Image 1 (tube, rainbow, N blue to C red):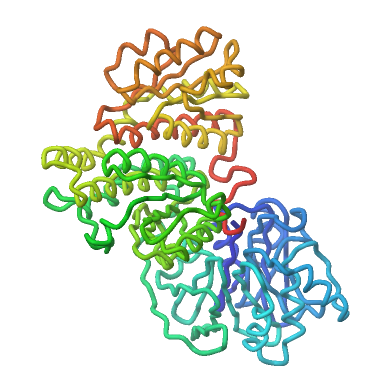
Image 2: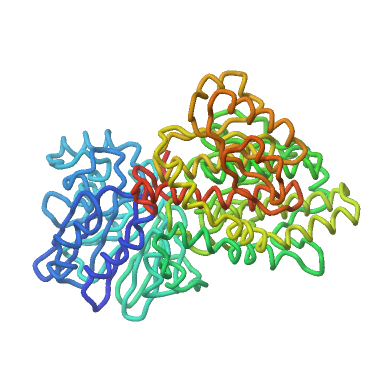
Length: 608
């Protein structure tokens, strides 16, 4: 959540800052602002609402001349989303301007201390204390003031700092919040992530916790929290600006749904060689694997639902107990974790705050940690013992699609890989599973091609206020993700239930014309699922079923049907969820929703 960007060079900074903020819109925000250092000091403009409001107030940046500046998109945590509470924030003498992503946990104590010293606060934010601390400690050396300031801060922060007395210089600092430096020629940058920078440079430096970057047009010097210079590696970003643009689609979400066959191919193709699953990045020895007696999967949101799929598949193939836990619960649960536990951490961004905290808690108890993430150099990737990257490419829409399916693909690969190493699979079964995984890209494309009627189905169902999803086993795991997609972008109330729980309370909510989306692709439990469909139909429900291609029995009960291509039963979830993503997209479109930027949501939740 929130986005920050900074620039110093020989060009006008404001248009570059505005462009960077537009690229960061997907992170979620409710206000935005920029500050530029010009000949007469720092000029700042802020606006609540969309970035377009800021663009208009600054005349596309022309109203703020100057070649050094910082920008911010804010997602409100402390104080309402107003112009006053928007970032940047400035010191009382307007000498220091700062932008901040994260939460300063001890801001109340710092605010009280600063007020006692005569500093006046204009906003309700936790961030403003940083600007006044900087002013308190600044004595002509910006780096020293930053080091003193961050030593007083508790919590999470990614900071961008501008000083009126230090032209051409910006400083970036991070702790428990993502921040990278972009390296150019005669100009340098910082930002929350590479999407803001890739149009200008593909060379980046990933900052570690506690580090600060001292940035001028000609140099970038990174220091640790004690002020000691650090040797840093410049990393080359592998994708270009076209990957972060819509490419002719109306929305990023639709583009990313359609990219899934290629994204999944990029995920699995390098990991299958001569009919064998090869995970070169997973260094667990045979002896260490034999000592694992429990696997735990932890994540938040859609990544947790991907982990729920992984639980079913890994447990079935490996015959090891598997738990899937919400990271926000696991971190506070005093879990039974030790050196015999393999913790699988799943995150698209690699910066999810609760997931990082749960990961640290389990690692401190001795767990071996395997991370499944998309973003190279992210915090989770750095903290893990081993990392399996999903290679999904940039995902801009807030609602994940290809991020989720590539996570499921990696979990399926992991399940087959571990089962083989544990001796749980004979050659025939192993070859069949590997072949099924190789077909994932074509299966996903087939799932899209099979359902050209999804826009019409969305028109039929979009007007309802409440929709229920039902499923059993892997269908239940898929139903949770399908329900989440629908609620987060269309704003309809949607809930997923294990179909076997209908009679334990849920059926009280089924009434005439209530839409029920019934997932019936897990063939072993198809007859039981048909019984559940009959139960809701008997109470007047409208049933939209999801069934395997060629299944004719489903028409006996369902009002409408979405078809999914046949595959290995353990892998049904991957093609099954894709038409549910499309259904959610078309429902949201029919409801006139802001599909790529749903209200109140952020792409990467970097605070609790």
